[in-house]
Length: 493
Image 1 (tube, helix red, strand yellow):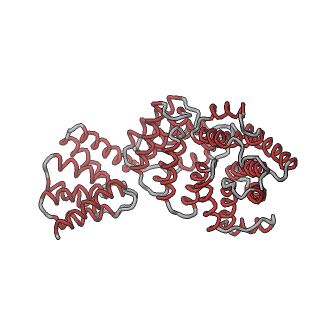
Image 2 (cartoon, one colour):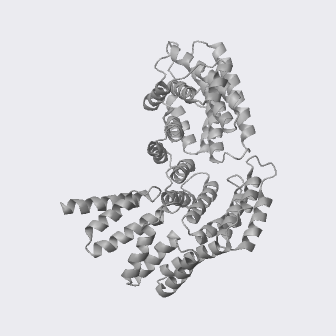
C-alpha cells in the first residue's frame, strides 16, 4: 500500500498540466515550469524533462542535435530515481517515476535502432511499474507502460523473441497489454495523451486499422493543436497507408496555414515540412509546376529544419524538373542536392539521391506531362481552345495518360462539345486506377454527371458506384459518389 498520508502522485494536477504543455509542443514553457518544479518531486521533474526533450526530437527525428542533451537528462533521471527507490522502497510513486525514466530512454533507443539496449530497458520498465502497482493498485497511470511492454513482447518477430529469451525477458500478452493501455488512458491522471499517441502507432503498424489510428491522431490534434506532429502524422498516414493523396495534400495545407499564422509551435520547422509535403502531393497529382513553386520557397528561405531540408528540397526539385523534361535544370539541382547533404549524414541520403539520378524520365514522357499541365492552366484561365490543342499534343505523345484524358474531357465539356467530353471521360474512367486513382474516379464522376443530364440514371448510378469503389481516390469524393448512387437507387424504387 502507499505510505500513509502520501498521495498516489504528488502534484498530479501540476504534473498533468506540464505534460499537456509538452504534448502541445510548448517546450520552453514546460522547461520553465520544470525548472521551478513546484509541488512535484524533483525526480519526477527530471523524468518529465527527458520526455520534453524526446518529444522535441520527434519533431525532427533524423537530426541528432538534441541527442546529447537528452542523454544527459535521462541518465540523471534514472540515477536519481534509482536512488529514490533505494531510500524509500515502499513508495509507489518512486517506482512509477523510475519506470518512466527507463521508458523515455527506451523510446529514444528504439528511435536510434539500439534494439538490444531498448529491450533491457523494457525489462526495467515492467519491473518498476509492476512494483509501483503492487504498492498502490490505484496508480492507474502505471498500467500504461506495463501494457505497452506486454503488447510488444507478444507481437515481436521471431528474431526479437529469440533476443527476449536470451536476455531472460518475460513474455507478453497482446490482448491484456492493450486492455492495460486503454485502462491507463481512461483512468490515469497523466498518461492519456501519451497513451493516445502510442495507441495510434499500434493500430497503424500492427493492428492495421488505419481509421482508428487516424481517430487517435485527430483527437490529439484537437486537444493539442499547437503541436505540428499530429497533423503532420495525419497527412503522412493518408499518403503512405490510406493512399489518399488529395486528403494528404489537404492536411499538409492545414499545417502550412497554421505555421504561417503562427498558430503552431516550432513554426519555421512546421512551415518547411509542410511545403515539402505539399510539393510531394502536388507532384503525385500531376501538378508539378506548383510543386516546384513550393520547393523553391523552401530553398530560398534557407530553412535548416527539418533535418537536411535543403538537400531534400533540391533533390525533389531535380526530380520535378526531370519529370517535366527539363534535363539541364534537373542536372544542376541534383548537384546542388548532393552538395547540401550534411557531412555527417546518417540517413544514407546521398546514396538515394545518386540512385535517383540514374533513373531519368524519357524526353517524350516529360514533354507530355509539361503539356498536360500547361493545358490545365489554360483551362483554368478559360482559354478553352488553346487548352484543347495543348492537351491534344500531350495525348499524341502519351495516348493513355489518365490525367490528360480527364483534363481533355473538362475542356470539351466547358466548350459544350458533349460528344467529345463523353468519349474522353469514358476512356479515362475505363483506365485501370494504377497510379492515378484520383483522376479515374473524377473522370467517372464527370461522366456520371453527363449521364444525369441525358436522363440515363442507370448508367449514372453504375459510374458513381465505380467511382466510390476506387481505392486511393479522395475519400470525400468517394463518399459523395456513394451517396449519389444510393439516391438514384432510392428514386428508382
